[in-house]
Image (cartoon, rainbow, N blue to C red):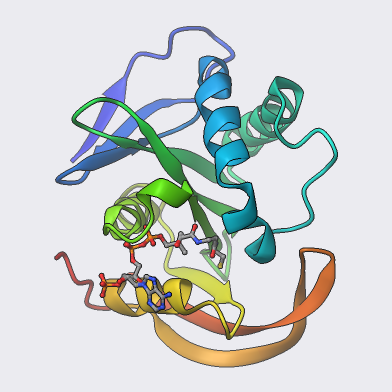
Length: 199
Ligand SMILES: CC(C)(COP(=O)(O)OP(=O)(O)OC[C@H]1O[C@@H](n2cnc3c(N)ncnc32)[C@H](O)[C@@H]1OP(=O)(O)O)[C@@H](O)C(=O)NCCC(=O)NCCS
């Protein structure tokens, strides 16, 4: 069930909230900057090997707002749908999950990205987050295919995608520049009609 909340200001992202059993996803808000900066700063060593090079101001309000404004533009243009992942029990920020490079027309596909705060990883929260984002992609945004790629050594990412129901489709050499280096990636995807685990 996709719940629609009233946006608090006219420049806010849409008031969408999708609930799992222990956590939920919703688009970011400007007031999330402190929780985001704090969690990313604490998780820096855990995240950096798997992400694009962090800018010098990566753990500042300015970096959050730059990202937020891009995400707002993307939502409005239908180019991307960014969400943050929160624990239901106490509204603690756990991580982020997003759809980017949304292509309609003959493709109707998007790329999935995600990250977790180090202290919350490995508890199955991101599997719930990815399942909810797929509900959004297939039931709300009208997409047909969601793609995700990971570096072959990223066992957590491989396992996450496998358990949610993604299929490995290929291997792309030097696919993305991660942590300052062009790195090979395993390519996976899930289609709207594919079975999805809901454990
Ligand atoms: C990838 C990431 C988002 C997954 O989030 P998560 O909260 O760990 O995801 P989940 O707990 O839902 O699932 C992870 C699975 O990997 C397993 N896992 C955890 N550590 C592992 C390891 N070192 N090797 C293999 N599997 C591992 C978990 O046991 C779990 O599988 P299970 O449910 O069968 O037990 C998170 O680990 C992360 O942010 N990693 C660092 C950054 C990153 O890799 N980003 C993605 C780039 S593609």
